[in-house]
Structures are given as C-alpha cells and as structure tokens.
Length: 113
Image (cartoon, rainbow, N blue to C red):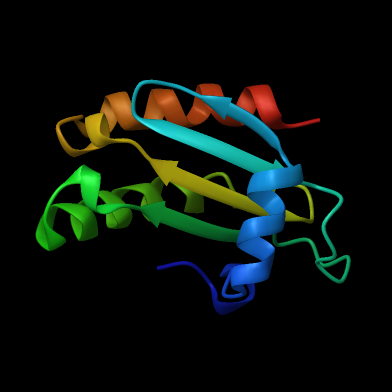
C-alpha cells in the first residue's frame, strides 16, 4: 500500500499529467510524469494507476494494480515532487514480476529529469 500522502486521487490531476507530462512506454506499462504539477512542493510524488478493462477481468486488474503499486513504492524516494501516472497495458496481465520491474524501471529512468 502506498502512503496516503503519495496517492493521487484527483481526476483532474490524472488528466493533466497524462496530457502535459513526460511519457515513456514499454510492452507492459506506460509511465507519465508531470514534475511541474502542483504537489505543494512535498517530496512524496503523487502516484496514480490506470488499469483498464482491456487488461482483463476484475481479479486480473486488481492483481496487476497491486504488483505495480508494490514496485512503485520502492521508487518513491527517487521521484521528484509532482504527479506520476502508471498505465498498465494488456501485456501486463501475463507478465511476471521481474518483467514488470524491469519495464517500470526503464520507463522511470526515461521520464525522470
């Protein structure tokens, strides 16, 4: 579970980050980072997840979301203040944990300033 201070809950922030943020994609995830977003200057980056129905049924989507949340939690200290949105692609449903970890790490490395 992410700390409450690091959870993105505003739909407007989701939209703004996806439209204006830096983007990097891989086979399993697409990462959007908007470091210019107003996050009150607090160190924890606000993080949100998008796991659509094309990923699978409810059980599969929740499993993918839990895996991604766990992987992002390990990177929270290195993220700048701002908004991060992680969108799962359909291939994430069949990916194992090491593949998700490497794809997420590679995408974060490309969007971080």
